[in-house]
Image 1 (cartoon, rainbow, N blue to C red):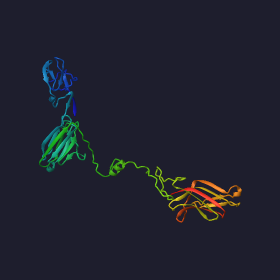
Image 2: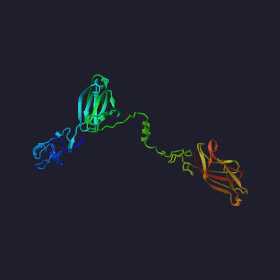
Image 3: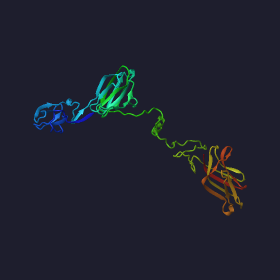
Image 4: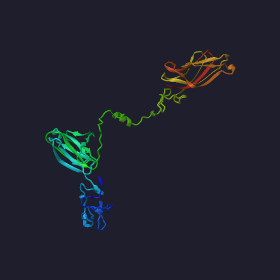
Length: 373
């Protein structure tokens, strides 16, 4: 991390009229001008400056100010200083002494401070984490952050390593708030870079409500799974001639009822009779499917003068009249907007039959349709 700071002010190094301005590339900052030459005065490892005598108006001669000479309490404006971590190891406090404390002074307001504590478990003491914003005059509780869980805590009773967010604080300390026996050893490292992210409470495994959502492995897996297709696209099955074809699905997953039928489900039949008994027109191989009749044609060749009737064995027991030939009729021809449904079985097979109202020589009928569920 780089720290922006400005012109070095010490007790007797600058005249009252010192001004700041940008310096050359190898300088760190400008601390003023030499009153004799008017040249700018830089802080750096290579530049020199004729500083005025203390409190005077004349040049005090060349002087070299190394970057390391900028110490605590100095203020540098326009200078950029590299700040390193501030580690400290092997520090001890007596756990038997109430309020004994290990304190880290945060000279540059380091963003995070890490601690490693040993001997605390054996001592039986309790340490409280506290921070100060005013150089140690006032202390308040601070949160430690467990590295493995991200949980926050303000006191500790066991040996462990943890971190504390200390940005803008001036001091951080571990204080004996409950005494024990023996020595506690503490190491610390104050760093200008903070990478701490903490939770105020844990998220354990399982189904736990977070607001209105649920932290569940099953729900997460379902949310990440690809959305299923509304219907699977499968090739049409291959079936033997005369065998029923399984119902097919639409893109919305509904069973298709194809009025008119496809070539593989269409059926038709023709028959004639001179009797008044049932005559088979179409018969399927089994009773698994229904017959949907969409067309019927019947005609008569007799010389009768009265209308005869053809009755089908569909679910509505439909009746069709055939006028006599002498009246210019003698036939019927019809296509159904809604198919006639046949479920009747003959010899355990779905069968479409017609019955003439009276024996007539001869009545011919043709029927067309398809079969399905």
